[in-house]
Image (cartoon, rainbow, N blue to C red):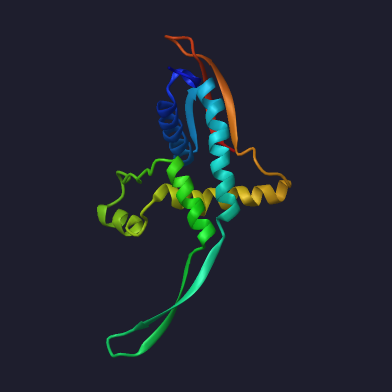
Length: 168
């Protein structure tokens, strides 16, 4: 039996995951007013969770032996347990979008730039979006309000109210 947005729970979750992934990747999407309103709270919760832990890293010393048998200690930075748990929760709420090679970029340059990135959307969320909104929250003294909805009017064909939802 269809519920909110005229869809079953499973279909609705898939729709929100898809639209949230696209919104975070592109920064702006066009959809219906009802879907935009539902998507707003979904995305804001994801961004808030990312903001809370984006800079929570742990520095670890790793001891390795080289070819000659000498022990070398290297320092590496890894996600803390809280950040890893938050990252996994967010990954469950989004689809993992892959970066598309621009037409003007060579294949070798694209591979060199994106070779070590396993989850591009998560990297973008934790390295670009979360720091930006954390700084914004610090300056304005408030959290939330990461998205904005513009109403466009009725769509030709079915008369559905269209809207643009974008990251502020």
